[in-house]
Length: 87
Image (cartoon, rainbow, N blue to C red):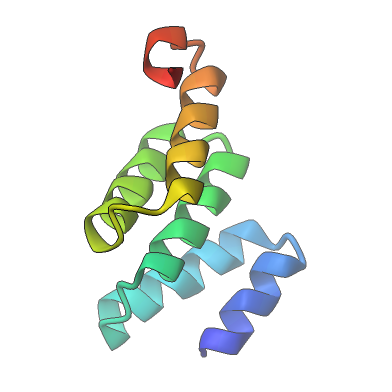
């Protein structure tokens, strides 16, 4: 299931990837940093910014030192035109 989810994500089948990631989290208890990071990115690509932020925040709870999620949160703030938060 995990490999299939990554393939969907890489093929830019984002809605299917989101559903697969949610299944991993809800049914297989796979709420890892990687899962939340990719789920957030898929939501962000679909302009579902609130959902993206929630996923990134969950990823930070798991791995609070990861610069990639901080970068994605800054890009999310720019997408929202929130320059204060982007800093």
